[in-house]
Image (cartoon, rainbow, N blue to C red; front, side, top):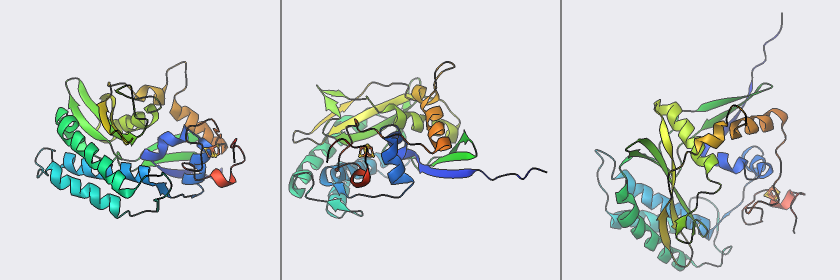
Amino acid sequence: MTEAFAPRVHTARASSWSKLFDCAYSWEGEHILGMRKAAGLRAHLGTSIHASTAAFDAGRLPGAEPISALDAADVFVDTLRNPDRDVDFKQDGLSVDDAERIGLSLHAMYCSEISPRFAFHSVEQQLTPLEIDCGGGQVVRLTGSMDRARVARHPDGVVIPDVKTGTRVIADGVAQTKGRSAQLGTYQLMYEHTEGVPTVGGQILALSTSSRPAAAVSRIWDAKRVMVGTEDQPGLIQIAAGMFRTGLFPPNPSSPLCSAKYCARWNTCHFKEED
Ligand code: SF4
């Protein structure tokens, strides 16, 4: 009689999944080997804006107690000045006061110009775990919430708008969608798995944390397409399954995130092309 082997289950946060397709070697270091690095102040500024805009949007959900933009701004200041994780305040050449000025300006723009354009169903919704059978006895279980994303009503169905911050999220006044399909496609798939209803696509709500704060909303696009592929072409899920099945996570020294600032594996990685 053949003995049945239990599959090896890798649990990964859905919100980390897109980084697997940027530099898989870095993703393995952080999410399988447990390597960590402190966030820079600009990244922490983004986290703080996410917290305050999420508080504001949660107050706009059906039946919720509204929260004013002014009260939600307190969430921003509190998160910025009292981080609950390691933050390297010297890394980005940005003072906390400047970060606060930029963040408050973006928070006000978001609450007055962007949020009112949407009818939200949920904010940072908890998702039902989704298991991907990679073959070879390896299973990936995606878990967690739709970190930083919302679910919104649209005439054609449900859309997943995702708040993105950073200095390059807007170019020539246009919210950038390049490189966002893995994240939004994962959220589309997991939302459909959780709620059993189809989604129309993803959308980027871009907040630029440069010294000239700006906000923009992208077009809606079907991000799920690149995750599932077609009859003739593999999707990213199939490619990810190959990595887990073989244990080979390829490096990407050409990644824009290949730097000591962003990569937790930087110090020990022999694939990087600069010291
Ligand atoms: S240093 Fe560059 S190539 Fe190496 S793991 Fe980090 S991002 Fe990838």
